[in-house]
Image 1 (cartoon, rainbow, N blue to C red):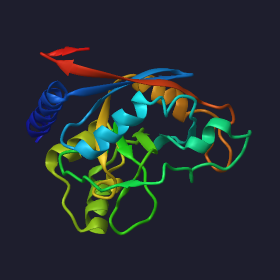
Image 2: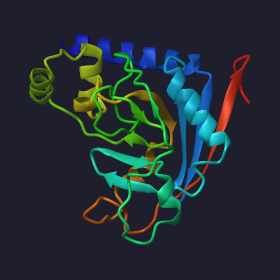
Image 3: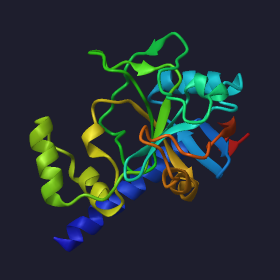
Image 4: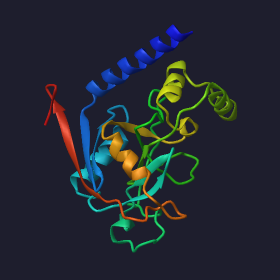
Length: 223
């Protein structure tokens, strides 16, 4: 059994590395707390294209991480947050359009997943600008079994091992589009998610995104 777990985790790490190599775009997210780097998946083209477009137009410059919940996630992208007063409620700002869901079983809510936020809509269409990065927590076999029963869907063994060994938010799988993953800077995510916050989960001290720069891979080199 132990050998099986090791093989499953090794398989995941291998697949994750291959996935990272195959991606075309990388986002460099500079924040008050430090820099986060994330690859953007090419198999979620609508979300990746939109994120790249917004980043290149400097849309994210000055927005806040307006919602942070330890063992869950950090959320940003509300354009209203750029001019928000201390303690002001945030989260309903948008860009006037949604992105059709791009739900893929191989992209799931492991720790460090980059995903699109959304409101409650039957199509599971994503916000055109708001996103979150998963902090998550580690799960036991019993907890994962309960999630499977609740969702009436089996969690693949490789994903189970990741949720047990590394953590994530498996209850979100199949409901929100995951379109990238953090490759560097999870310590920065941890700094942000553990900020003291108010009852609406907004940090007491504003946590800004200073800039989001996009790098493109060409001939195996990031430019």
